Length: 399
Image 1 (cartoon, rainbow, N blue to C red):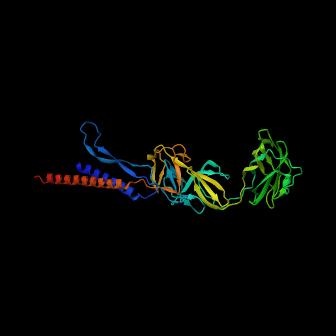
Image 2 (cartoon, helix red, strand yellow; image 1 turned 120 degrees about the vertical axis):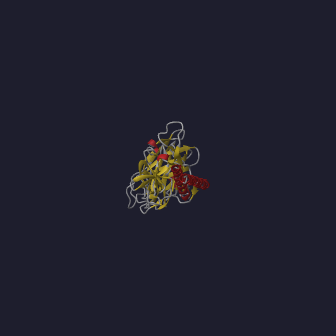
Image 3 (spheres, helix red, strand yellow; image 1 turned 45 degrees about the horizontal axis):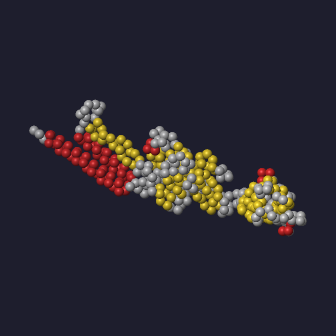
């Protein structure tokens, strides 16, 4: 019996040493989570009665420690670390795997992949950069960003209530025929820049006219602008006017909406607070960045940024129940429960640290102590077998 008991001890010590060796071997593996051998005793028979003799030891389970590893800065914008709970979702040949290793780059098609070619998945974005609820592989568009024709201009300004009305008809080339003006660059459907000039001409108490020119050519006629006695805009209706349609050379016909809601008429000098327009020229991809919320932005040479998607994170009710499948990955199992997927920094999910990687959570000093303990356990069980063998030989030699 002692032989059999000692053999279970030898097997347990060898298995424990193997687990420790695996931990030590992966001390520098990004996102690796150390394992621990958990033992349980063996009892012969049905275990009834008060004088039960043990029958050795068995491995009850091998659990993993999912505690946070240190986060190291790398400078690579697509290296990602999770600070907090959660796993990255990666598409592994049509099936979903979960990982804490954020070593990512792009393949020839622009998909964000790890060194094994597994694609990072997340919430997709529409053409305007709005994040949707659809989950798919995240992809960086390496082509040019198409131009966007300006459709709206927003003006923030103050018109001087003390100004007097010009005596002669409006002429954009004659400053004596208007009170104030401002200009900004806008874009047509081809991304070609043009200059729009906005003129303000006082016509009476709290009453003004607005004129617009495009590349020094007047577009449409006058639009009436009025204010109340507190200097707040009352017309045009809704505070917005639309230019007449015009057609830049080679481009599509265009009409621009001009928002004047932030224009006031106070008894102080004319001043422009801001001028905004929503168009841009075409641009080439200059770089990518990922925010703590997981939103993936592409930056272009025209100064624009566009959201391409958002990294999704997944957590489980019982992470210990995940099935370890290698390659720094785990798979869902019945014991783990259903995957709980959401945006970073929502619910219990952690945040994304771009340009960083999570180190292995293996503590080498602790593992080296475990090696010594496993070695002593193995030697002690081996000594039991030696002693049992000597005792057996003694009994066999009795005449």
